[in-house]
Picture (cartoon, rainbow, N blue to C red):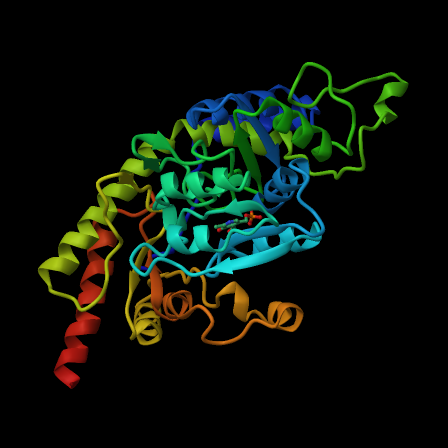
Amino acid sequence: MEIPYRAPIVTDDMRRKALEVLESGTTFGGQETERFEVELAQRCGCRYGVSANSGTSATMLALDARGVGRGDEVIMAANAYIGVLAAVVKLGATPVFVEADPETGNIAPGAAAAAMTPKTRAIVPIHMYGFPCDMDPIVEAARAHDAFVLEDAAHALGAEYKGRPAGGLGDAGFFSFSGKMITVFSTGGAVVTNDRALAESMSSLRDQGRLRDEKISFIRRTDASWYDQRWIGYNMHLSEMACALGRLQLRLLDEFTAKRRKGAAYYTARFRDAGLPFRTPPERPWANPCYLHYSVCTPRRDALVEFLRRRAIGVGIHYPRPLHLLEPVKARYGTRDGQFPIAERLCGETVSLPVGPHMTDEMLARVADSVIAFFQEGRAVA
Ligand SMILES: Cc1ncc(COP(=O)(O)O)c(C=O)c1O
């Protein structure tokens, strides 16, 4: 039996809806888009949502709408995802990498505060694997520097910090919908916020910089004002089809999250019982993670990956290399090996086990048995 790392859940509702949207002729900016944005925002305790054609586009829209650009510094974890780096660099701003917390893998709040300078314009804390960052000290440090807090909640739809939903904890938060907590069956992303002016600006930028009226979502104009622009923007719409499917996926989010939490609790109990020599995902009284990835940390990571792959078990590595050690980053900013030892170690030692809603009890048991067998065989050899 092959155990894939992820597999989409497709329901009859989704099949019917796909056909309906296909036959409606609306390709973007229709009612499904508007409703998806509102429902997503509500889910995160926010007033406004702006969808985009990827999480990377969503990052770009948020930072651009906030005016981040040349001469500005943007703080991010050294072990974060390349999409955030891309948005920052393409806007002409400078990425400032910060060390990770060794236990959570999230940006270390103390290191983030210490990295703030008069040029800091934004901080993008990532809720790694769906485990929320300790946001209070991050927001406090950002406020002291009037910096924009954009949560990278790509992994964290459904996670909570102190009972509040991830994505709604900073000034804005963004999500990705390709193979994440929900999927839109294409690339996709969105930003949620309580800041109306920011939402209007993102919506305009997404739509070639067109003028808005009272609506946040797209409005199709038939007169000459279609070409009236507020500024130069992008075409970053998320398709109507993707939004329609996203709405149906969103209704399953609680079920998906509950399954992931159950799978994660099962793995942790099995690994602790077996006394395995690795770090299981962190637990904190203030965190209710959603476990997009169930990630463990071991110096024998590469051998474990190989062992599991031979048994047809899909695994993930998020991410194999920290941002400061990517070749174009080294060439451009002079970053080097050893600069962020914790982030470097985490990238070398972390592996994610399949825990998605497609996993049956039997599959979970097979993965746990295999991981335990790997370490027990290792002991026998040693
Ligand atoms: C943590 C994180 N941030 C941002 C992104 C970017 O999202 P997208 O791939 O939709 O552009 C991803 C995508 O995998 C991600 O994992």
